[in-house]
Length: 221
Length: 262
Ligand SMILES: Nc1ncnc2c1ncn2[C@@H]1O[C@H](COP(=O)(O)OP(=O)(O)OP(=O)(O)O)[C@@H](O)[C@H]1O
Ligand SMILES: [Mg+2]
Image 1 (cartoon, rainbow over the protein chains, first blue to last red):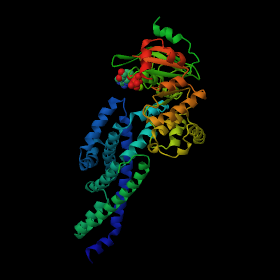
Image 2: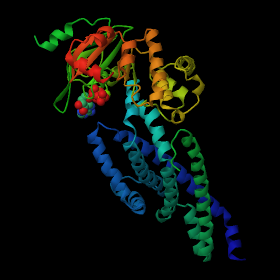
Image 3: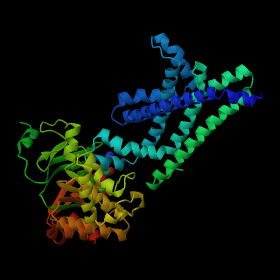
Image 4: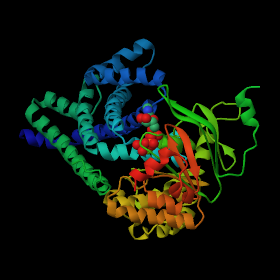
């Protein structure tokens, strides 16, 4: 039996690793996106006592290696009496970490958001919440689409770190197979294929979304 | 009894806009000084004055985009911005009174992610709570009125300046405001596009809309106004019907201004 045949027989392990990776990715990136949006809203002017600490938190997160955050949540939180299993601390770490990146991306775009549009919204009787949801946020998302796409790919790759805190995802599957049968190269090549395939699909989808925003004059390529 | 106390007891009139003793400063520089102005229902008032005289600030106080330090503004009898005892209105109440004014900006400020129809229906649906069906029917009428019904599905980035401004006018009209406020609606337009926008505004005046218009277009001001107001360093130094204002101005300042703008 050659190495590839061994891997083929272990395909169920890859597949379930892949499904965990995709579940973790889907849950954490959705949460991260929400966190980014909420943070952007909280950063909207006139609340300096909230905005300052939030900015510090976002910057702090961005300067932290993801792996260390994952460690902290998994091994550090129990010290504070909060015990999360590997799965949920992994998802939590990804969500918060990439949420901060999303927030920072949004914030950059918010700085150059045309103030005239906000005035027009006020003049038409919009209050803050509705204005944010209906007029500001959709435009910020369209404008930052390429950066969001990149962030999705970073987040996908960061799921691989969770092997360190014993989450049974795709990289963990490869790791265990390569350990059992001593075929690291082939095992990791398979995993790379999975990550590439997902990344390429995401790229295509994000590009397609670009047509939607290009029609509206948001022509970031 | 304080001055403010006396003021607040004055009964609001049935004017579309009543501005009393309005003062506003930026960084300790008084930009509006004790301005009083009434705009009757159905009247068109144009505000003239040289650059920096406070025209935009006055207009933007009317819908509370700028907050004056003193004075009061009533829109159709309802006070905007502060309550009678001088406290700030709640955010919700302010938004509700604001919605009684419609504003058209020099820079259009359309929402680029929404097509023309949805620019017009956005606030009626999400601020006034109208049904989509009702809002769209009304929007179609208004877009017809401003000559933009053929561009209903277009996005703002594909429109000319004149077209954008006509959509912005329809968007403001869709709120069925008590008064329309225009801040130099044609100043950002290429000369050949000015006429189409001024034409729309003239039509509105013929239909009896109440409007306050800041403009540098003298011929237009003369043709469309019931009253002309001249601001100078934050003071109204002349206020008259257009005939008197343009043919027989009372002050030397206005005479000079008119000579320069011939
Ligand atoms: N947000 C602001 N902060 C500080 N000063 C301001 C602000 N807005 C206006 N000003 C000042 O207030 C004065 C009146 O400004 P305003 O925009 O009302 O003039 P205007 O008559 O509309 O002029 P223009 O014809 O150039 O539009 C100007 O001196 C201007 O510099
Ligand atoms: Mg101005």
